[in-house]
Image (cartoon, rainbow, N blue to C red; front, side, top):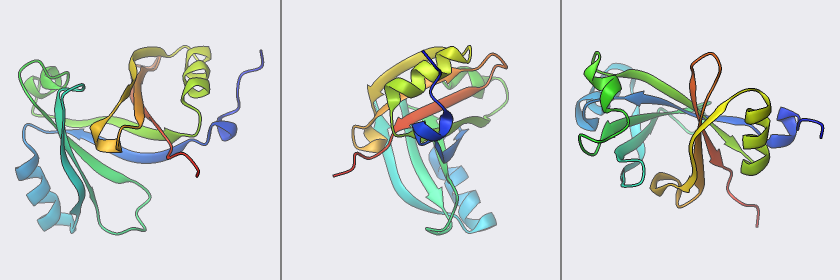
Length: 147
């Protein structure tokens, strides 16, 4: 089988995920410092064990900022926060074909960390997490189905 070409998978940068101890203080700082505002959320996601909100300056932004805070001590981002307070966590790409995108990732030596599972923040669209050979974490989210 020939690997699916990335263009055929409809990859689009959707957001930059940032791990934070709590949503409020960082949301306020990004608003005051850079003029960002909450465009959706907060959403509590019991499957991912996080609470998130999305910020943007305008509808013309290339990508949003997703702030991610733990819902409890068993949250997957808790270990990152305990090492230094948080920071850049992942990039998220939307894809038009989740299964083909995961196969493409596997063919490029990525490891499936979790998913695909429905996500509260995306109205039930599925997300998956992959880890690259160069130790980077990426999130994939299904594109909104064409009607």
